[in-house]
Image (tube, rainbow over all chains, first blue to last red):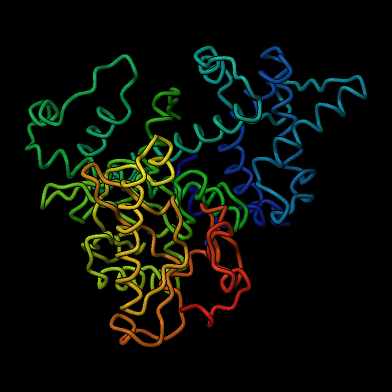
Amino acid sequence: MSNEEQGGAFPATRHSVLMAAQSDDPAVRSRAIETVVTTYWKPIYKYVRMRWSFSPEDAQDFTQEFFARLLAKDFLDSYDPQKGRLRTFLRTCADRMYWNQSRDGRRQKRSGGESNLPLDFDGAERELSLTAKPESIEEYFEKEWIRSLFSLALERLCARCEESGKTIHFALFERYDLREENEPKPSYNQLASEFGLTITDVTNHLAWARREFRRSVLDQLRDMTASEEEFRREAQTLLGVDGL
Amino acid sequence: MRWLSDPVVDRLHSALSLPDLAGTRYRAVRHLARGGMGTVWLAQDTVLGRKVALKILDSAAESSEFAARLLREASVVARLEHPGIVPVHDAGVLPDGRAYYAMKYVEGTRLDQFVQKTTPLSERLRLFQRIAEPVAFAHSKGVLHRDLKPENIMIGGFGEVLVLDWGTAKVMETGGVAASEPPDHSASDSARAPRGAPTTAHGDILGTPGYMSPEQAQGEVNALD
């Protein structure tokens, strides 16, 4: 699923992801659910792995079942944006589904051919192996949500840079802002000689890329939230602004 | 989808929190404080090569109302030219639509922290006088601070005293600064909806309970002089 497809799925309003997900039109609902799944499946999968120490196989079944129910409108119909954030609601739904399954003494096993979503569980497992055990499971879920948001925003930024012929801007951003902890921080001078630019160009290109990344995050956030109010709340938490 | 490690997520998160100052003469350095309707950042003025404090509105969406208030606050303080009042250098709107103003960055110790150490009586009296001078000057220009308290007074490294945060100031009907201002309004209504100042009361009673006058505490705004 490309980001453009995600972004263009709700022409009336960018905040209509939830309404679209509850639409009676299967095509509209499917596109909306796809956005929700793309954004939330990893946080949900990792959350159940961490919270209940599920095996990878059980966590995969749980995640597939969770989003299948989402698709079947079991969950989203009861969501009221006035009462809380969508991500908190989804986490609570996961908790509720777990407790219901535990109470009923069953764990849903899904066969491979049962319209499973194509989710990269192996990739999620690799990421889990690189993550420290959290002190608070709620904070962990929030951090995974932010990681998912930033990763998707980064894809948007990358696409924007390619479309506008600014791949060098993205390369600089990658080299400087996305470097890993064990990589030495390059100076602007180093970057200038490495990329054959002036230091002023490096400064300007990085400023542009950061500005565009910020815009991508806000665009992504709009797709991931269910109302203007929630969008503003999340923007305030993330960026220190009420929404731009 | 690319996986981002914790340090990279933290770095991006931190970078996103900085104000977007592209196209301005300022470069954000770090967060300093949070006020009623905006946040104060330490920034570098790249033209003059000096540090400044930038007060930036949180919201661009409601810019017409809040921006007007913030810019009015800047305008009122800018015209209070006194050594004991933080000078305003510049004001405007950022590329992202948020209003801001730039003022002198004051390095020093807040009065409430300063008096924690033993200070001779003569020094305390000197401080008292230095606080009273800018307040009296502002009164002569028709401006009442309305939130004078130790947290809003800064003692600089050379003993200079500065009265900060005129965001809840009232412009009187008469007076030098007030002559061109609409009467009986706060320079900013930040204390009407404070977010970062829990000690400042909401509603029509403005200020900090422990430091306000009886008239102010009773909400008799017009009785203040």
